[in-house]
Length: 455
Image (cartoon, rainbow, N blue to C red; front, side, top):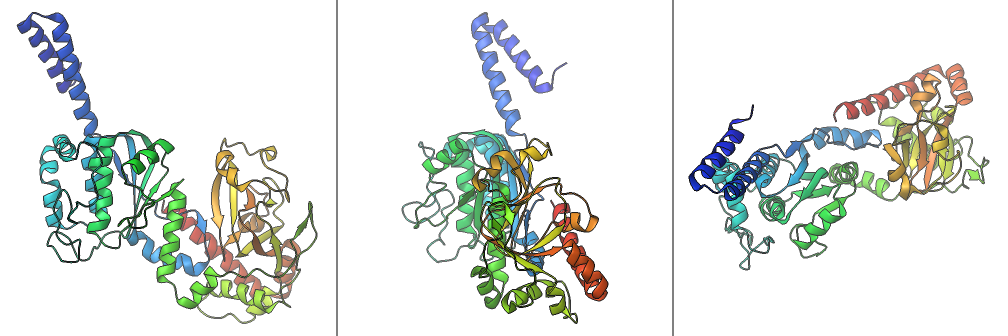
């Protein structure tokens, strides 16, 4: 039993052999028919997936998360490419990208008239219209689009280019599932995606998970360039999560007040020694009550979780200590006791698990040792990254369970910390403040769960 297309190939081969009387020539023609059939069938396979993942694994302070929850869903679009990319799959890629960034109806009509009717042959036609070097320039010599002859790139308006787009402002193209590509996919597909940033002013593009050979091919065809005069600069990141984090930073910067931006972009480290001397935790500030700047920073983090200033918030902060650790320092390990939880003041942390799923403690360095943060991606899976205002290790602390992941400082970091003994004292001495802290932890966990469920 074979499909109709395969049956047509077999019958065509049989008829040709019968009519020509040449078996060898008939087999060659049959092979040619089979190749054409394969190309047509493969071109109709879906090579583009619109990903629901629009948030990174980066933990941020509450105000930044509110901004991202409000704007990221409408501003960010992620498409993931699959399989081998060639001219036959270019129509799908361009059409899906145009839908996400909000192409105008007239532009869609001009762009996809033949492609929508003919499917695979639309991709063939577009490939044949590209130049012989498979390197379609973004603009022609006279400053117009080489395929659609747009006339508005020099400032004048055209009916084919919408002045405003209701679609995504940031487009991420992920190549992690791409097995291969050729130059025809670039000239008829990826170059057309780059063209969208010209026809949709303000659109920013990011490519992620490119293999070295793919990136070299894209650079050779000038899809990716380092030229500052290029009209469209496409950023490249090793992983999708890195690209999402980069875009989230841009959204937060564009939506935040100047005062808050100054604080976020110019972090101040507390003037205290590093917490670990050798392998011993020997130098920490047991209470930040005597450090007004640090106390104010922690109060501002907790205030974001409440609609009003709870009475005695400064007393709550006095139960927290402060420590400073170097880049690469292991803060805690798998299977260690959760006797503290942390709030990031300045810097960044990464929680990690081994890629092979083995949770044995021998796979990680001992606590208070150093690791090469550049090699983390090769040996471990980064579960989350924690930045200013985020909580770390609070779930195991509250549940009194052992750690299920390790935590490493990916940059020089200052941390607020709450010990088990301080937590017990807070519950006994200030139960209302302990309840406020518990609510903060619950809201933080809820935000983390919402981010995970949104993927």
